[in-house]
Amino acid sequence: MGPRVLINGIWYKIIRIPVLPFGMVNAHLIITEAGCILVDAGLPDSEHKIERVLARYGLTLHSIKLIIVTHAHVDHAGSAARLRELSGAPILAHRDDADFYSRRAPMTFCPTGWFGLLFLKTPLPYQPYIGFEPDILLGGADIMNLATFGVDGIPLGTLRARYRWSYLPRTLWWAISSLREFCSAASR
Picture 1 (cartoon, one colour):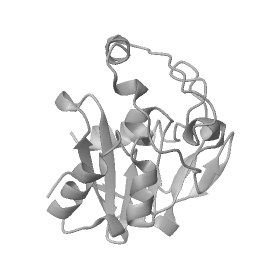
Picture 2 (cartoon, rainbow, N blue to C red; picture 1 turned 30 degrees about the vertical axis):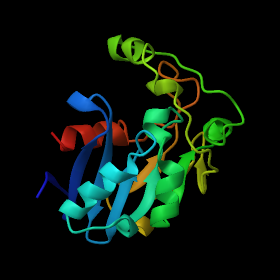
Picture 3 (cartoon, rainbow, N blue to C red; picture 1 turned 180 degrees about the horizontal axis):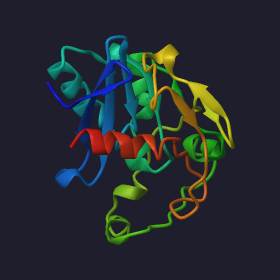
Picture 4 (tube, rainbow, N blue to C red; picture 1 turned 90 degrees about the vertical axis):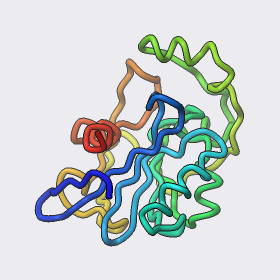
């Protein structure tokens, strides 16, 4: 069934999708009765892993109502364009990463820990992915209610764009600590 979280009377299933072994890189599905939101799209070709996980819960790629890409690194954005094509779901991302997503600017890296340093020694971060233009861009103090996409309530009902300079000069982190951190904690 997967972990369930009750928030203000609404049940959410938070499903972790391992992109790399040992849970080093993950995508997450937030599943509600209205459909699901995908947080991060994984490496190129991760759409197959995501589709298999959806099938385990009786869902298809068309069940995805929104694709949130937290930043432009290949392990988070690599399958976004293909998943949008297959699901019809819009992509939400930070406006300051737009040139990276579209591939108009080369990706930059600022590893913050041992995994980041090790990851940069592999060919994975340098893998090309299909460039895309996000359908919804947030930046600065922009706020967006996610009720349209089936996530209604606190803390997941609202996203706020803000910067976390220690990780990547341009990245989207979410209010309520961060949506990825919430998903990671809830899916344990």
